[in-house]
Image (tube, rainbow, N blue to C red; front, side):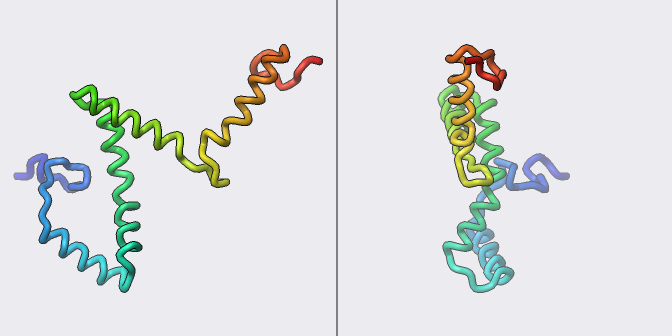
Length: 121
């Protein structure tokens, strides 16, 4: 009978035990499938593929960890990642928002109502 430790999605199952022989076999298979790639290319691809599950794990820890210090550190990581996401034009998300925030603050300082793009003179 399959228990929680036999989940089909072992990447998200923390009870999955590390087997170094199995990991080495996996890497051999990766080399067979993807051909002659450098260690850097292989490492980059493996990290990119693991990143979504790792992000979900950190988000889960930031909300549900029993230890307050763990929740705080995971929360700091989540906020840091969220503020460093690049937009399509290569700018960080906060950089793209900053001009709008400054523009809105200047309008308010000059007597315009928030959200009103017509500044009275």
